[in-house]
Image (cartoon, rainbow, N blue to C red; front, side, top):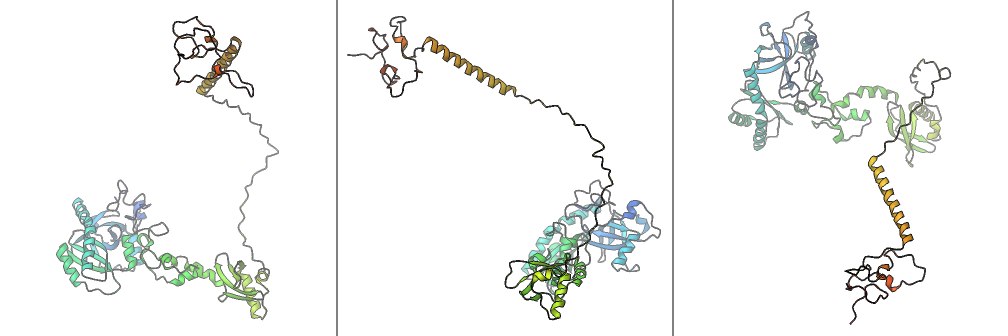
Amino acid sequence: MGCIGCSCSTGKDSTKGCKSNGGCATGGCNRHNTYDWITAQGIADPRPFDAVEVSFKNGSRKEFFKNPQHTRATTGDWVVVESIGGGFDVGTVTLTGELVRLQMKRKRVRQDARLGQVVRKAHERDLERLDEVRKEERDILIHARAIARSLDLNMKIGDVEFQGDGRKCTFFYTADGRVDFRELIRHYARDFKVKVEMRQIGARQESARIGGLGNCGRELCCSTWLTEFKSVNTAAARYQNLAINQTKLSGMCGRLKCCLNYELDTYIDALEDFPDRAERLKTNAGLAILIKTDVFKRLMFYTYAEDRGKLYPIHVDQIWEAIDMIKSGKLPGSLEDILAMAPAPEVDEPEEAEPDFENVHDVIQLPIEKRNKRKKKRNKNRDRSQSAAAAVEKASQNDAAQGRRQGPPPRRHDRPQGGNQGGNQGGGNRPPQNRPEQRQGERPKQDQRPPNPNKKQDQRPNQGGGRGGNNPDKK
């Protein structure tokens, strides 16, 4: 069992969390996940602790409650707890035993503080009622924002959370200052028929409740693991040599990103070796100005103020020597002279250990492997088509050679037609359609010209045995 609406919680052990404590890919159930490894290992607490940590609405809110022994509630169980404002709420037990003691100490909650109590384990009817009120939260959020806008209140309703029994609804809002929402509460109580509680939160807390993805591609730190918000200012960006761009330095909440403080201490320690006033260096070749600084490589990039075509990466130790020379009253000749003052110390990188292998190249010689030549697979269809084409070409050559020996065959329009099978022999000996090659400059004879298909030809055989086999009729 996992959080409500989680598709990956089916068939999973509740003590291991979604996907074996790997967290879901979405931001729905990866809010401040905790892993009770003591309960998962089956280790008994040497000092039993009667308090438990209960999570509400997928980790958006966590509180501590007293857990009597008769409830027998353990990590991963759905429980019904007493609400501070009256009524009952439904949540999930996330931590028990010694880990709760450490969490209370971390959040500065005294062990003798007055805490609510776990009533019993939740049954199916409690979970069904919780699902019903959770489905109504989105519609109520939209309606609540419309009412606040109609009253011209300078506030933003960020989230809505129903109590487990559905009798109370908490509206989380953000505002720049104090807001008189007495009239707003009357509208909410009349329209929603529940007990209304207004709670003001900051922009970072709002992003933590809503969740989302940052520009780094990961889920927001405030919604997954970050619980304490420290102040972030632009000085953290200057120490890290970041451009002061409000758009790039701001997070989903509209404030400066919390991750600007993660590596700030490392940058501050590394910047102690750099000179404070080294933005400009006077040289005989001209004034040199600092363009950028590589903190971890200990390099400072300079160029001339008059000619900024080339950058000179100079080590910090060389800059210190140049500053000492300037203080003594001597100016370095140029940036090239500063580069030649003292070579930058080389960083001793750990050498990779070479494997202790024996050279057996001249001792052992492997025989040359004989590979069998692969026979190319022939395409049978291609071979058949090639052989058929060759046979056709050979047959045409034979027919041409036989035609030269026996004489050209008669053309179709020169053959005798009708009943004259043997009348005129000259009509059947006309030159063939593929006449022989003509000599250069020789005109074709009249009887060798191709017939005109538009002119009607005589169907009778030639009576006179003249030059042509079929002549047109003459009147």
